[in-house]
Length: 486
Image (cartoon, rainbow, N blue to C red; front, side):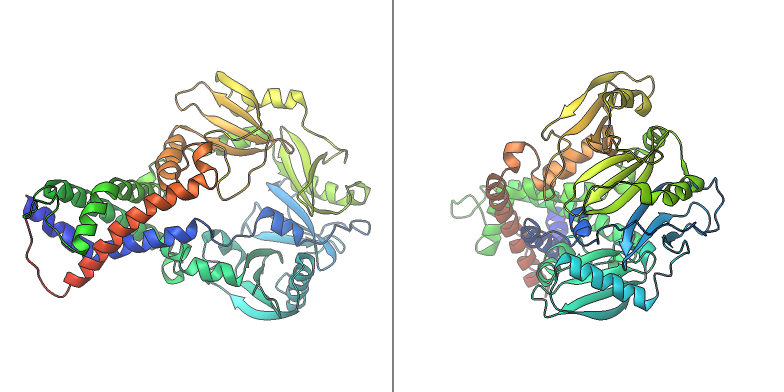
């Protein structure tokens, strides 16, 4: 039996060991550089202030008055106000309407694309003259599936920009949806792209990528279990009285494998859990609760009536974006400024409508009618399931916890009253088995800097030495058979 464990560990290590070593080395980079993503704050900072005094012409889009509209957005595009939403009728396309003319806007018009890119460059404070980089269907920074509905994308940069910023404009809405800098691109090529197995040629095929990551993680799990079994078995069998029979790189691999092998195992297994293999730990989602919280659907006739009255809306200074949505049977509007400040309005009266105490008290019954509430109230700082890590969350939030088998908990934005996070029984497991084991997200104290950095560096150095020495021996032995020491 042990002979077969030696053989399996050796030959798995020749191939999977290299992948695991790369996972560890790229993990150091990911501690400090995240995958490029246009944050909410960055997006708002790149928008022109809303100018609604000259709108709005009757909207001419040919939709039935009763067509549901999930959510609408109003922003400036090339110095004109536009309304965007996703159509609820075939072909379910993204729709952009010019509020000045009332007509559907062709956001693929080269003049509009260039003007949109130039406006974003100016508002975001990027120096230099605009450079068009052409159309993009798939590249390394727009390969994620959420970008698909906006493709083709049009990429732009600015000559003389020392940061090497590149940004992508949607052909469907004319909005900037992704931004990268030279520094982010460089570090992600040796960080996230390696760690997530994210090369475009693989990641653009979502099913194939998923299967590759899952099966490599499973192979890494078996490799680590075999290695731990062998390492324990070989302890104190040295021929010269030492605790290990190995020398050189094999000795380093034996020692670090023994002392850090359990961390190798937890990291590779938690990485597997991040993929929710075969539906494990996915949770049931919040679709039902979201529908009950809405109470009703916005309809196209509501949108048209709202657009016609926009000049009456008295917005805060420097407002750059409106979002309309249904909430508890009412039409609500969130107004955003360039600094991410927000205010809620009533979409029918056009008056300020902050969330009231009675609305907060009604939320539990809207969420899960008939369920027993364990607790409901304000969360002023993080808890075990809503906390900061690589991204800054907003506090306070309103938290509702139910006394059901999954101890379901829900977190609501204090300004909009919208659901921002749900954690059910499976997601609780996912939080600890992935986020806890993979990133060290166990307690507030452990996440604080530099405690987290020291903790992760010590563990990752040991794990990296173990995987790198194993990969080195696998590559060295690939040329021919070696005697197996038992």
